Length: 273
Image (cartoon, rainbow, N blue to C red; front, side, top):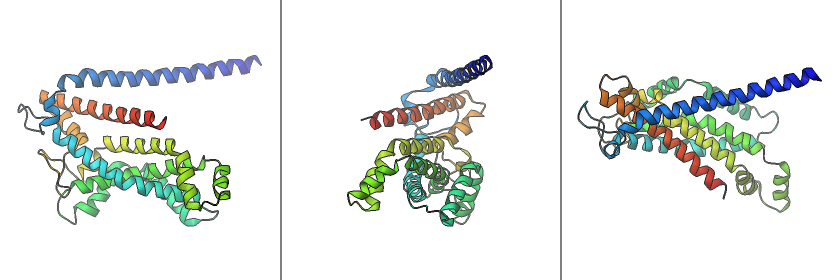
């Protein structure tokens, strides 16, 4: 008994210590971002496009490009991933090889390095047309997000009790109505979390955009042309030898972090109502 108690205490201490270390690391990252990023935050950061060193340029075009590409990628990934997840959770009978293949491909895509996805989309949408484009960047981000949405949707729907489905069927509702009105509603909290995780991953990706949208120093709303993005601007400015560019890189990193944090807070507050 004494040995079991000592093991239990040791496990509790190790678990609590791991949690403390994780919180300290997170607080350290947030403090570094705030202390290094806030000095460069001004109205010009949002209104001015990227420019040469010392010209007073901002990140306005990069912020707009990130919103456009990430938003389009989410429009592609969310319905595609959710439909695949619903199929795997609700229509995957025993011995269904197609469903097993879809699940296997989703698992493989989740572990593929993002730079390989960028190279694949480069061969598919950039090289044949002879130019980089914001649309190619959005497709590359969507490819990264789809497997995460698929697995999250499937896992959350499988947690919905079978009795709920049987109750819907007993009331005469067709299967699609049971899935949409009961199962999706019951699992919406977990599915929303999965969509947020996918959005957070897309918002911080740089490698696939290097081979697809490339970046742009000016304003660009044309998805058929190279388009700026915040991760690419951070990548470009962080290694520069100009102080104003390095300052903008820290400010951009702070904006990405705050954006993801605000989306999480808003969605969690709305899901409680």
